[in-house]
Length: 131
Image (cartoon, rainbow, N blue to C red):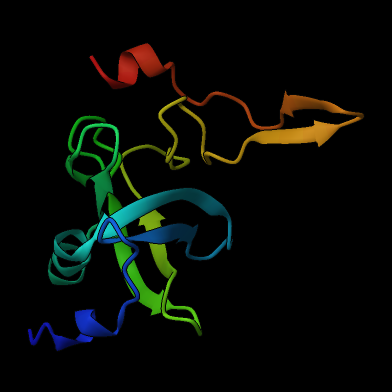
């Protein structure tokens, strides 16, 4: 695949672009992460999400440790070319688990009456995901 399309992305000063993973079918926003040029290229090539882990300072193939892979159906970019949107199917557990806390979505905290509370259940104990 020709990689010139990667030149159209507005990478930040660290060579990263923010990425949103949205579930195909439900439209649920499952997670936010970062990609560098190599991660985005590998994602397009493999059809599975590969991110850049800022905390580990390395490529992170989503699901490599948890088994919760993300099958990519579409890769989109916003009008400013500085945010990527992946349309994905979350694999490895039914219902899909995208969050390291064992929840379906990383966006499980909801502000109610000035307090953050968990609005989604833990589907699988995180200690059993990363054994």
